[in-house]
Every structure is written in structure tokens, then in C-alpha cells.
Amino acid sequence: MSVEPESPASAEESAELEKCGWKTVRVITWFSVGMAVAALGIYVGNELRCRAKFKKRTPYDFYANAGEQQASEFGMGI
Image (cartoon, rainbow, N blue to C red; front, side):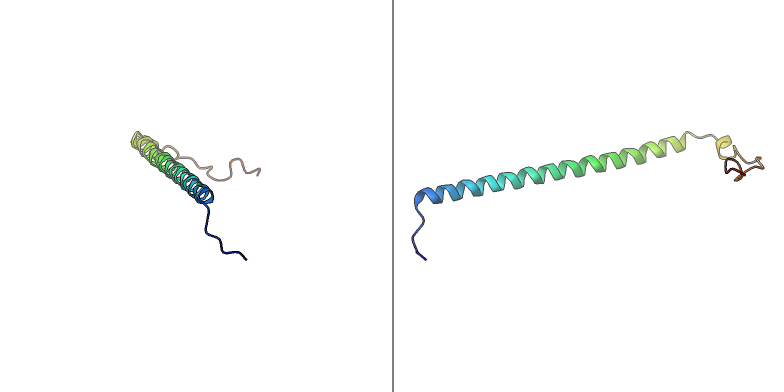
């Protein structure tokens, strides 16, 4: 085990690796933030679209199948 002080070259390499590490962390952080914003935007857009579609209904749409007698047997293979 030798206890030698770091040479200036290895100190520079260490600083360069540390800068590279911070750049990587920064890129990953910004990418994660961007993905979170995109996911939130898609979710909010979908909710707004669903609400807008629901508001365009007429009173007749709510009772469109009120008189049908064949409710659950249709299409079940009976």
C-alpha cells in the first residue's frame, strides 16, 4: 500500500469524470421531467375530451335503450 498524493493528471481525470457524471444525471433528470409532463398532458387531454363528449349528449341519448326488453341475452350464444 503506497500512500502517494494524487498527481495533477489523475486529479484532472477525476474532475472530468465528475463533470461527465453530472451531465448524465442532468440529462436523465430532464428526460424524466419531460416524460412526466407528457404523461400528465395526455391524461388531462383525455379527461377534457371525455367531458366534452359527455356534454354533447342530448336528453334522448340517456334514454336510448329504455324500451328494449332484450338486455343481456343478446350475443351471449343462448
